[in-house]
Image 1 (cartoon, one colour):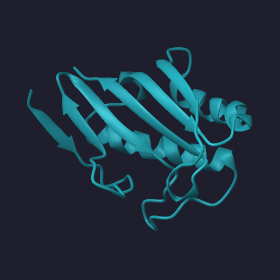
Image 2 (tube, rainbow, N blue to C red):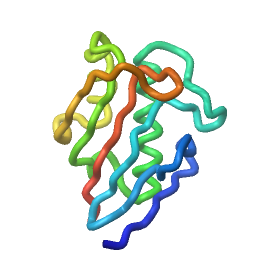
Image 3 (cartoon, rainbow, N blue to C red):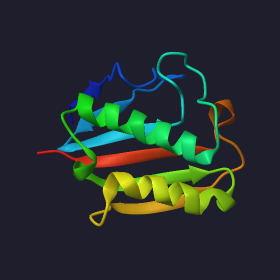
Length: 127
């Protein structure tokens, strides 16, 4: 199956051997985003709400590079270092999706790249 790499200049560059997203078979598979500031390549300062807002901003940029929006997202996975952050992350996440939220999994992990407290990956269905 042929696939196309997607590169968003308004999202942080990958920090390893992977792509920001791959378009294949009518879907967009987005790599997990952590709260990196695209200008500095560093984690944004602040609490879990600030980190989650940056993650959602980064995801929006990757989706836009594929001519998609949050309305195209059908599945997400949230990775949290501390499940006590769940409610705050859920509130910020919900701002992007509203009542038509996609299917979702939330997973507790021991650690995330660069000391992030949250990472979110998405799959979008494209026209």
